[in-house]
Image 1 (cartoon, each protein chain N blue to C red):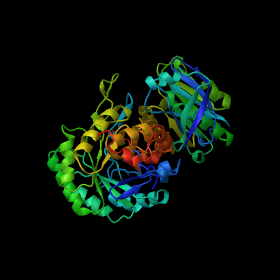
Image 2: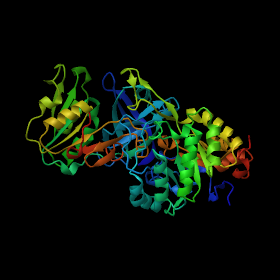
Image 3: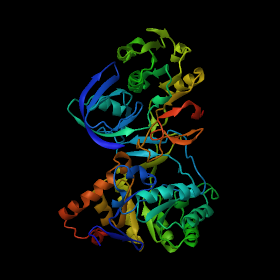
Image 4: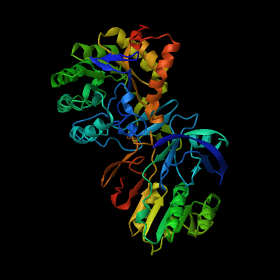
Length: 244
Length: 303
């Protein structure tokens, strides 16, 4: 973990309520796909944890959805402004486990961290397939970006307005060696039930600090209590314990 | 002895700044980003006899200038604290540390303190009396002078180290509780713990926190905390450790003027992990601006 000040280079809408923000500065602490940053947004008390969608040597890109007061304020920030950022948070996805044909399954605002993961896996010469789930055609984002990387992309929409009608689980076929997923919890549960290989799940939870101090986001797993922010957000399929 | 040093129950602190229990773990997350030996001391994560997972999620709700938490005393239990956490703490912190202990019965408080009593690095016990008394109808120990008195007496027998009783603000008369602590052998009191609060999710029309209610903390509670520190320090002859919404060097000085010998910083650590470092670094300048030569000299200065 490191506290840094990053400058907003871009903050634009991708859809009605999904935005893309690029931040420039010391981003060296982001070492793995699936890690996140925790942003101080003036006007709200707690920081806002956002997963990293992409990174290069001196910038990171965040793709986030406006869901409440904090993200609404975030969407109105202009380029040139400097943000107080805790970076290098979370364990991130383990790329070593992917096998030759990894499958990436993302739902809605859970899709962004899979982009950097896809890039990393393609760099390692893997054959990457991606399933992106949305409610409707107007909400689709990052599809072209995944295709431009060289992934085989399948889109699903709940209302059938684009791609395969239904949920992401309807588009899961055999032949993958390992899977990576991120999305709303009901989707993660369905993916858990439908998949047949080992895999990794990235979870979202209300956090206090985002760096392991407050125990605000602890969950029970088959390997003990884990803090989503510090010991996660990525958990392996074999350690997940669904409650409720 | 430096200009910022204070003496808390016979132990010298380099400065009065103490990260509060539950916001600082066992120190090592923070040791990654700064040398935590600059702190006066810190109060480690509330420890109980058995391991506790705590409450269901969500445990956190945001508020204007504050937050509510209902973590529910998640901790690995006293035996693992001794075998796993304290050895790790020792590597990154080399001063006496404050052991925060909790219990759901008088016996549990005494047991946890006596198990930790042999740990050399523990300088003080901070006893959290905000837990429900399972043998007393579930009401918090800290709401009744008689129940607090029982805890203080039992802990007094378990250790010779200084005992600081951490008081709940969710009472009608905090002064009578503080006096019960003093009368039964407490060496100091610390206050305030969190204020009971809640939030409702407007879309779901349900409480945000799974436990419904939780502890409200952060800058919003500072005036309430300050008022209670003032009332208690005027009424007792033992030291008072002030806390509640402290997030700047000015807040530390204000708490000391209200009677605090030392000052705990809690929620600020969660929003800015360097909060205590920044406060300690800002203190000399602030003292100079205010014409304070020696921080000790202002304790109770407004009383």
